[in-house]
Image (cartoon, rainbow over all chains, first blue to last red; front, side, top):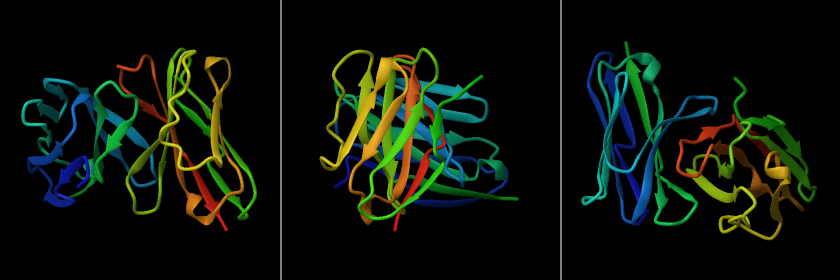
Length: 109
Length: 113
């Protein structure tokens, strides 16, 4: 079993829809990252959180430490949101990030 | 402003040759990470540098892989005697301090023929 599980693996949405991507992890963590990777490879850090909720524009990230679960929400989705969304956790007191396999999102106009 | 810069962007090498990949982190960032992403695979941690501390090499897949960070800035990842399974995109990331968000470079796509 992977330490970080994401769901769904693939998601196709219509423009304007509300999107949720889930991340569950099995280890104690000090922080959780949500990353966005566009075709061509560039990776952008969207959020880093260790508790509660963060919002940036149309993106919202939440984390429940007790349940070892995080969600990334996209409101009013747009075709430019099409990308791979990756959840990564920083284990305990360690330095490395453990990555989920990613969620491939396609938003159709 | 300048982001994380990696060079070369693409590298094709013959099996058995050595390669060096370079990462210029954002100025002032004390933490530097190397990751790799193999075709169809997720991201994999390789090595972490923080200031003057000894690096965390726990992710390096074999002793053919090594990395150094000179003067707390530029880092070089070296792969000796490359194998076909080393083909991947090698990504570098830096952060101001370990607890701050990561900034990724665009990666070096390594192809071993």
